[in-house]
Length: 413
Image 1 (cartoon, rainbow, N blue to C red):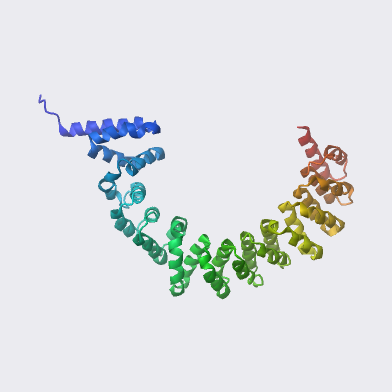
Image 2: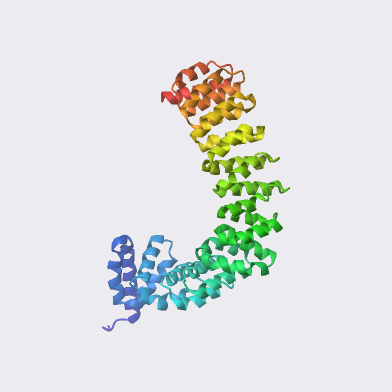
């Protein structure tokens, strides 16, 4: 028998032993690099190739440990071992290799990554975009702009928005500059991106497109103006509160709430008079978001509002939970047409001082007023709640009796 070892067997044994070493090292992330690096230095070619195969596994922890090696002590090996992995044929390896190369700012990877944007499966294209967006180089950013302004794949475009938003400061001015020359379909995609970003640079584009084409392009602008939130953005939105389409008015009142701007308060109070129930409901929700900015405006408005406005203001006040609303809400109890809403809102408002105003309604002639009063007193954790609930167990209405029983059971536990 020959004493000469078979080179293949030596290589195979070495690879096998390194794989076993890896398996053991993955179990102790804190000492992973210490265990693995000496073996890699002893046999770099075969062992680094084995490391790359880890990216095919489903073990995310293992893949991150290997990726950290390539970002650190094995950084100089990236070009030789990871650059060849920029192939759409192995999407998982592509994803990890592309990100590591980008994190290491390897310029040689850029041409291959940019080429991928011209046509590849969606997961690979999105991985390439994520990697390219990490390069702080003009050609990388320009490639992303061109992709977004030319790709015909709507799934890729839609999925890319969150990824490429990281370079928004570069993209937004470029998109605004080219916006007038784009066709309508591409304008919609640009507006969608700008709306997601909410850049104040896009204010003029949003206001103009909303004015010219409120029901199509304008839909994207409404969201963007809500994110910008300035007084000028509010003014642009308010112009559409008289739009004949209720769904546009609904989107506008929703966006006014997103502005978190004091200037949105009066328009929203006015929207409580909208003929559409849906618009009025969204106006209430938006008021709960901006009403705290100047509650005195709401207090002043409720004193001279018509029925629908009062209902909306009552519902919003209960959710805003400002003490200044306590007195005007108690006053609304004098109007029986508002009782259904006022009793409930005083409970939501949450101030115990309201219990004296609520107690008389436990004996109201209408069962639903008795029920609302009892449940609101429960929200306030009123001092005499147990006694009142025990009295209500004898109520002629089963809904009131059941509510009283639930309160008693809850308090006893």
